[in-house]
Length: 409
Ligand SMILES: Cc1cc2nc3c(=O)[nH]c(=O)nc-3n(C[C@H](O)[C@H](O)[C@H](O)COP(=O)(O)OP(=O)(O)OC[C@H]3O[C@@H](n4cnc5c(N)ncnc54)[C@H](O)[C@@H]3O)c2cc1C
Image 1 (cartoon, rainbow, N blue to C red):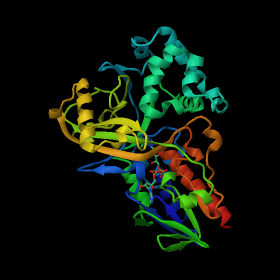
Image 2: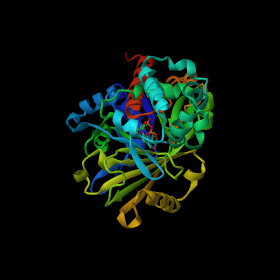
Image 3: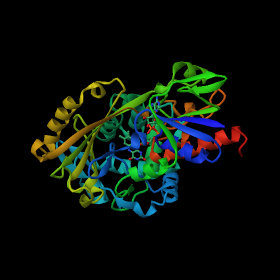
Image 4: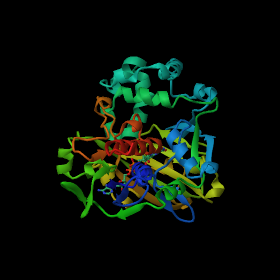
């Protein structure tokens, strides 16, 4: 039995690892193994887009253990802050939150109660309400305007108005495990590239864009296959297969990220700073305020923005983006002379847009086209947020479905 897996991101790699004992598996990858979790390497390797993990990322933690990398997995409280008018306000301990001057005390209390209650709520019933309407109705206009709106704009760019309230409720619930000093996050010391390198060991990975057709069997780049597992973003799928598989249209957002090596820190001891001001980036993620500076020998800073696949920001050239980012970064006291290098990384399809009604339309692994399966960012384990854990889980789960359908169970 021959199985073609399209895309060698974490979903495709996990599916291949699960299936290789049972079938002849070929992975097809358009650009880089590891996909959105791939790294940029110089004297060290660092993810192109900031990455960390959570205590309840069970599939990811298990994969790390199976690959004998557990000793590298470290957990630390990652400090967060809000930047307003170029000033950074830490928001970790109750004391810091009380001191924050840009929110009324009544709003702080309301927000605390909302977060505490989030775990017990049935978020699914709020899937048809927009996040803006939901927040305004439940928490009031001023909390929406002063706190949530800048966060939503930073996370979803121009698409924030389409997001469902269920998404927010589910997100708050999974992120409400906090210590007194803040939320603990995990990282694979020296980079997740180590996990990806071990995952790809021994797999048959062929580079290049794929063309899929069906002629009795599936034909992928002139090779014949019994089954196909498609793990790349759905807009990458040939339209004829898309129609035969009866897949719904899914909207995606894109990511634009600057990664900077610098001589100076921007955010002191803060890992994640949401930016309330309207700048070219919505968050500053300072990796070396999370992992030791000595691992890199310079400060590593991400500037994160989201856009649409054909949006204004995504369409700008790298040099224009660098200028824009550096100009805005000066507001935080980092100038061109402090910067060793800057790279721009873009992902056209970086996440589905969790719009109203999304939960009802989550796509199952089996499609209407027999032998053709889809998995990845659009699968159930990646709701309410796509993640390394969700992609590994969806890769392992789709492999189980293929095995069952092929009588390997
Ligand atoms: C800015 C950003 C920050 C993130 N931060 C975190 C984080 O902190 N923690 C976390 O857990 N997750 C994070 N993620 C999410 C995580 O990286 C993804 O959920 C996960 O890596 C997705 O894996 P995947 O295999 O499902 O998809 P992808 O990584 O998209 O893999 C799909 C693969 O298919 C390939 N492909 C596309 N088209 C074709 C084609 N036509 N033919 C062949 N191959 C094709 C692509 O090149 C890619 O390698 C982040 C993502 C982004 C964008």
